[in-house]
Image 1: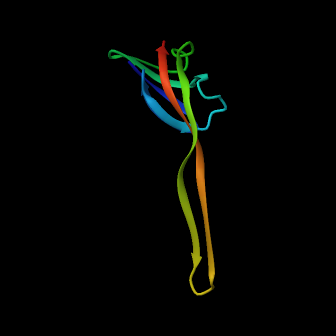
Image 2 (image 1 turned 30 degrees about the vertical axis):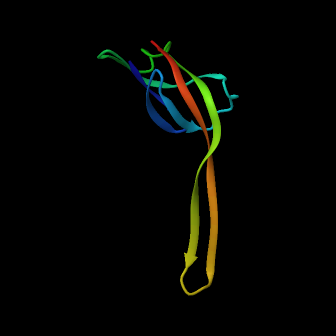
Image 3 (image 1 turned 180 degrees about the vertical axis):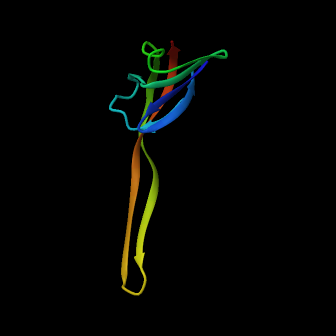
Length: 103
């Protein structure tokens, strides 16, 4: 059984026991979170899609860790003017483990 969920502007295909990294969620470590909206649920080739059919569906996950992602370096440069800017960014992420998927 697997489900397709949307969180943080991205979609993820998850199954029970999977650990995924998503955009930061405001939940404490070892806390529980319901991941919604759910786009699709596949239960042994019985596919359910659509907001009306999945209104009662839930994907429950446990927060494993809150951390900063890998550093992305940004370098701006303009030729012949001496303009150089170097900055960086580390995206805050949450690692969650999927506990249950129910229809």
